[in-house]
Amino acid sequence: MKILGAVMLAAVLGGVGCAGPKEAARDVEAAVPGLSQKQEGVVTDVDKDAHRIALKTVDKPAGQEVWFALTPDTKLERDGQLVTWDDIHEGTPVRVSFEPAAGAEKTYKVELLTGQKADEVKQKAELLGD
Image (cartoon, rainbow, N blue to C red; front, side):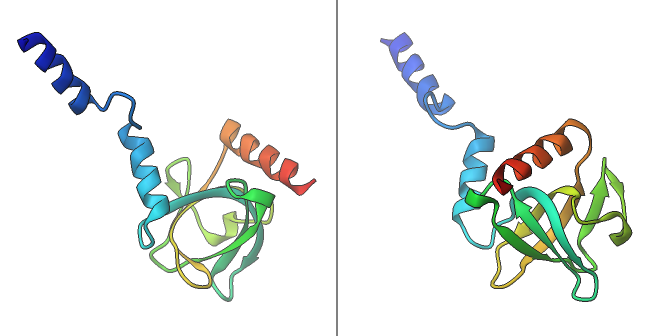
């Protein structure tokens, strides 16, 4: 009986059949407004005067364009190194960390993607453009 109880407890605590912590966190972030979310896509417009970028997303149906507002606190990175506005151009594959907001999203970090991940995002964006 003790063994059966230990197995049942392990199943409950181990979350057998449940999403892992990363998946659960993504689900919660996507469902609750005000929590940070991530979006991948290709930059379609850079408005330096208004401090915002437009992104053709690859995670949403039909690759819709979304505007992201950048503040002085927004981190711009490539391979973990800080970059500047001058490194962001139309066609740049990026991952944006943001908080949903009315109008342009409030952006915490823009990661300029490189290598295989950049190629994957470009390919997805091209497929959605057809």
